[in-house]
Amino acid sequence: MNKFFNSFIQSHQTLAITADQQHISFAAFWQDVSQQAQLISLRPESIWALWQQDSYEFLVLLFAALQAKKRVLLPPHRVAQLEQNLAAQNIYFLSRQTSTEVTPSFALDFSDQFIDQAQIVFYTSGSTGEPKHIQRTLLQLFNEVKGLNQTFSLPEAVIALATVSHQHIYGLLFKVLWPLLTGRSFYSPQLAFPEDVIGIQRHFAEQGLVNYVISSPALLKRWTLDLELVNSLAVFSSGGKLEKGVRPLLNQSITEIFGSSETGGIAYRTEDESAWQAFADVKVEIQQQCLKVQTEHAFSTDWIETGDLAEWHDVTDLASGFKLLGRADRLIKLEEKRLSLDAIEQTIQTLAEIKQCHALLIEQEQRQFLACIVVLHDAAHQHLQQIGKQAFVSGLKQQLHGQLENIATPRLWRFLTELPQNSQSKLDKQYLKSLFQPMLEPVILSRSQVDECRQLKLEFTPELLCFKGHFPNQPIYPGVGQIGFIQTFAKHIWADLDWCNGYEQLKFQHLIRPYHVIELKLTRKQHKVSFQLSDAEQTLASGRLLFALKDLDRETI
Image 1 (cartoon, one colour):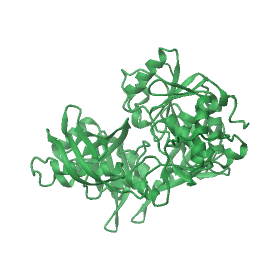
Image 2 (cartoon, rainbow, N blue to C red):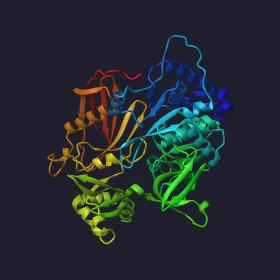
Image 3 (cartoon, one colour):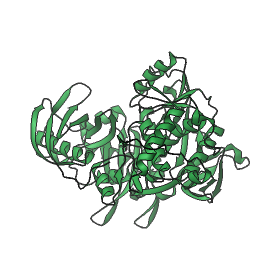
């Protein structure tokens, strides 16, 4: 038996705890894998896409497909366009297989050859925003789990709780593979809000159980001082830089994780401006400010150039760690002038009005422009609405005069209540660029799924075309425009929805104005999609859209 699959294979210890508090043992899990592997092995497809909301179901199907000698793709979401693109390549989404026939027992393979050859493909965004496929083997992922175990001292009797998806390598490693290989447990549902984390912690604390939390900057910044973690031994954060001021909100130290899908985890730190410490199984070099790493858990065992700029915290003591200086691909050339987008952001963020910002280079009509998406402090955001965008931007540029060269001062500006993030809590570069094109739909700040309900947090910026003409002095977002973007979002989520051919119980109860932040909830029953638009105070609109359904060439399995 392979060294990674030790005595836990036949263990009656708990591996997974479901939403209804069912405890599933390691032995029951592997029996489930064996049954599913037998059925999947009978399928002719050699490649499957896998997306499951529930972590236990995901883990069963992942190992069942790999045991059946299938290649597995892990997309970050399951939306219509991706589903159609994969179907065109004869790649379909895998779900639990059922059969009324009695099948022979499937012999699970735990050999070195199996874990070295089993392949998982992750989707990630490169510097251009175009999706890239990153191939990793089980051996590389298992080596990384070994490194996590060497770096962080957690007891065996601890439960993993996650607000991030297992579809991304960070959630996959920290939530499900780490417990699987070390005899720990995980709570299967993905938690959506800080209150959900506290609630399940209190439940487990009543049973004398401890936990660790796998989260992201997007959720941790929503924490408040009255939400106290219960029996939590560690809190991990990855997917982006943790904002200053977040750590004091939690009664537990936050361990930031730095890495990528290509390299896996590289380093960690527990304070905002402290140096990064490499994981136990990672070697680090810095040559001409370029960070290089070598580890057995990356896609290659050779030295890998990360694309990150760095410097040693103390050149006389390299063990003291390193500091990141930004991304090499964020050095741009504009009108023959070399500029650093990171340096531009740092300067803009020195202004008292600015809470957060993201600078980017966009192209319009064959010309390049420097643009900036800005999150303002509350008082500044109110001032913006009072005096208007043009006057507000003029004031910012006056403050930046002398701090930034004219060419380094953004020409185009967008003001939002938060930076939009994808389902992996990362900035979607292509989506951010689209915010400087003619805007037909409200900005999607974030998206989540709670049970069968899809939730989108939307912001209605004044640049939206639907505001023009409705009305000059008191712009409102018309009902027909609301129906339009709801149709678009629903069809983006569900691949088999075609054109909208009817409506039921439409109610437009309150107005939507510029800068309004609203939550859209979508639920589906057959060809009907129910929607509700609401803010913190009230429901603004609701109803049902009736869709014609496409005759897909082939149903997902």
